[in-house]
Image (cartoon, rainbow, N blue to C red; front, side, top):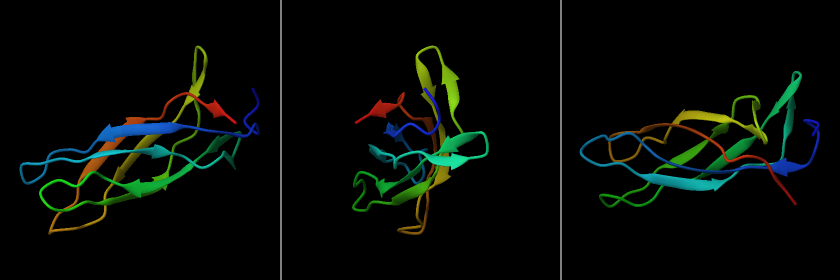
Length: 99
């Protein structure tokens, strides 16, 4: 597989706990975006609604991390600031998915 192949990744995770609650998030990334000798992906979406509110998540993954059967990407970030707080999140995507 070359990094130029058309693929995307699913992702899901849970934010850290702030003000006695957290949020779940899930979605799928954009197709690959060339990045040096590797590639990255853009992602965006909303968290679950907890304690009467939700947060926006968006960003770019890190470069590809090779695995036995393909690759994944690291996702680290901070949600939007809503209801006087934000949450941090950190996870890896699924392996690549081809159309």
